[in-house]
Length: 163
Image (cartoon, rainbow, N blue to C red; front, side, top):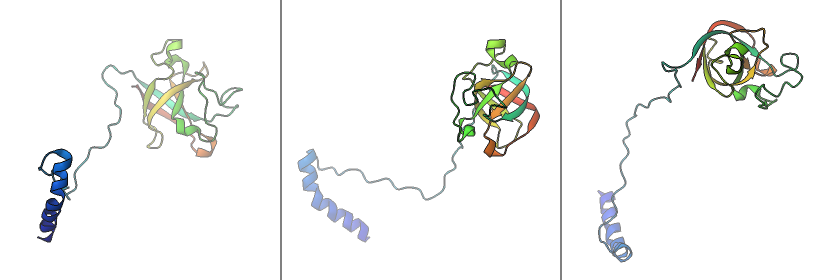
């Protein structure tokens, strides 16, 4: 009750000024009242492959940006991208075996985004193709991580989808 009286008094005081400024005696609309009840919200959509998407079953492993696992310049990928030495995993980059890359007859190019599924909650997700593996290796994805990430492993029957 007091709230409505205060609002009415406020309008009586401010109304002449509103009329002078806007040329109208109509007060501005009241602020909307927010509903205190929780509202269900959708989670952000995860990119999904469509019917035309390239899907390949591959084996997966991880690699570190170290000379003994790459080449003489371990911080530069095959497409020329520079790896952050302090946190390589932040990039979410990977290397593909050459038979999967378009340069060597495959259907995926450097810079393409791919979905990796079937490794673990920690490593599954969207990655960008930035590197190539040795020509002897076939049908494999190699995920870039750092030596301090303490991630090692080899996984079979991993699903790779070009997005």
